[in-house]
Amino acid sequence: MAEEETESVEAEEEIDDEAMAAEWEAMADDGEDEGGADANVGDSGERILNQDEIDSLLGFDVDVDGGDNSGITAIINSALVSYERLPMLEIVFDRLVRLMTTSLRNFTSDNVEVSLDNISSIRFGDYLNSIPLPAILAVFRAEQLDNYGLFTIDSNLIYSIVDVLLGGRRGTAAMRIEGRPYTTIERTLIQRMIEVVLADTQVAFEPLSKVDFALERLETNPRFAAIARPANAAILVKLRIDMEDRGGRIELLLPYATLEPIRKLLLQMFMGEKFGRDTIWESHLATELWSTKLKINAVLDEQLMSLNEVMNFKVGQTLMLGATPDSEIKLKCGEIDLVKGRMGRIGSNIAVRVEQPMEKPSGMRTLGLGK
Image 1 (tube, helix red, strand yellow):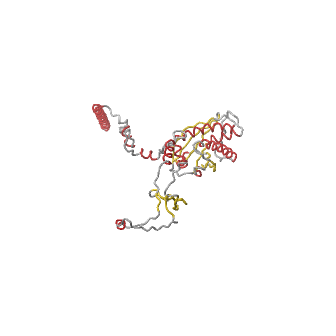
Image 2 (tube, one colour):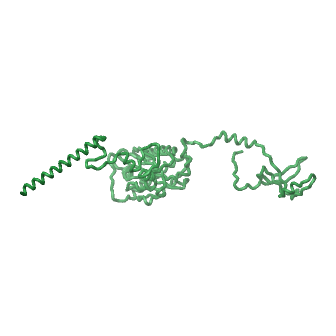
Image 3 (cartoon, helix red, strand yellow):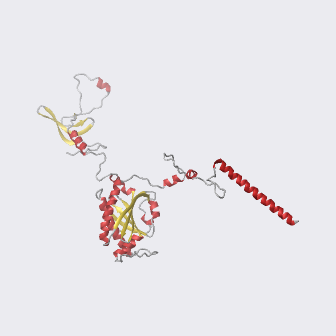
């Protein structure tokens, strides 16, 4: 009896499984009839988002015409640095690469190749957090610009320079000893190399503007090399130095605040470009100004009178002036006081002898056009 009940229960379960399978097949057939299999449904029955829905969720807009960014795009773009391009700066660093190639060959007595990887804009705080340690950071001062810059030398270049200067054999990689601070000898040798690079940087900037770079200190902790606020923007120049099978990277960071005094010069498209200035028109304007005729009035005295008194003037009336034959008079051009002098007579002409210039009113600027 028990065996018959067990067989009936198993039969019912098989019928239920077959009915469920038939129902799933019918649902699948309905989906195919409506538009084919749904590509957004996975094997587990969960719905998968398509690319448009993912872009919409993350805030990416594929429309090129624009629209306000939102979502993660706004967060990402808030950390980006978008500043004006400085064409002349690229020329300066190209010149720096050529100078460093020659100087470092003389410094190391080895075949040195210097290449410029890229020039980019970055926030100062992001750069400090991205420096791979261990490294040596050299803080230098730009005297004429009254601000600071930063050189970063990675460990590969440090050990390569030390190996080359101390007579390491060619064809073998420089030995790196991790887990210890740099020795005094290593810091001294790197300091000499940085001084050579700073001298080349000074020469590279010289055709544009005279700037003296002086090494301030060497640091191994980025926190002690903070020369700007973390949110301030800076120019990052990455240089690659190769000495046959050895070498490394050196990075130059210049805050935009450091370059601000010479920003107009860096915006030039070519050396010596002048913005809004034409020497031909300057000379023509100077010539015309020097030949311009001006009407000058000699003022003996000035009085303040009411309009009623002026309207009652009569022919033959005498006005008493507060001036004597020895009083100073003013020579004026319109409302501008020019000089002071004393009145006299030369022959039949009344003359004025200039004795002292008038004090220049505050706010007036002298137009220097030469003689």
